[in-house]
Image 1 (cartoon, each protein chain N blue to C red):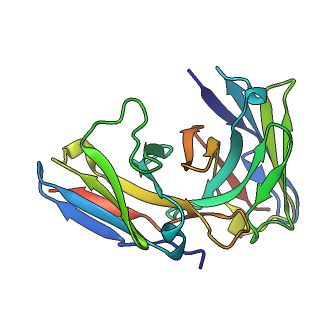
Image 2: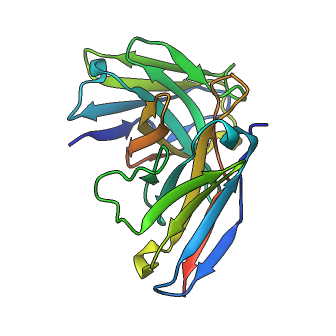
Image 3: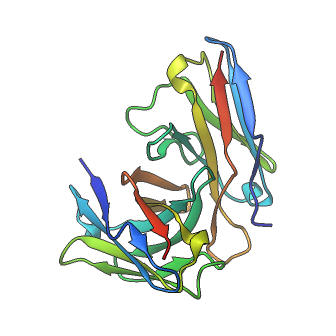
Amino acid sequence: QVQLQESGPGLVKPSETLSLTCAVSGYSISSGYYWGWIRQPPGKGLEWIGSIYHSGSTYYNPSLKSRVTISVDTSKNQFSLKLSSVTAADTAVYYCARHISSSWADAFDIWGQGTMVTVSS
Amino acid sequence: SSELTQDPAVSVALGQTVRITCQGDSLRSYYASWYQQKPGQAPVLVIYGKNNRPSGIPDRFSGSSSGNTASLTITGAQAEDEADYYCNSRDSSGNHLRVFGGGTKLTVL
């Protein structure tokens, strides 16, 4: 059974860097799939942040690209998100998810429980 | 265009059929995926690809697509289907963007 678990600080100061990690169990990241980050501001909809392949190739949301870095550590079977220069607008629940990306389907099939990150001084 | 448009709210009587729609130019090229989200919980994938259900998703959930519109149909809605539903697709402009619709709040009466 594949499971994903986000971890990281729940409070980040404005202008600092938000850092989260997603630990994957029940599946080896090296075996394939993309792995993605999605966020949801309180009371609002979902926003895709970016995705990474086990080889390290990445796709980012153009609206966040200048501030986002997603990396993978296959030895620890986890992947990470860094979002720099955060503001209150980055306050959200952050989800990690397994990302199916093929010619016949594109979907996030397994999600972590999510972690709330608040940007405040 | 990178936008997916959904009706903010839809209601259905218990046991009846409801269709939730998602419109966007990218849907002419790519299938939508659909997610159910209940309060305080992570989204759950219910439909992906042409009309595929992940293991554990009831067969009352189905998907279809025509032109720039994708639809999620719930045949015989149950009380536990009350939730927010989001569609998601690739953007067709070649920039690898993934886009979510704004979500539809489904109320089961």
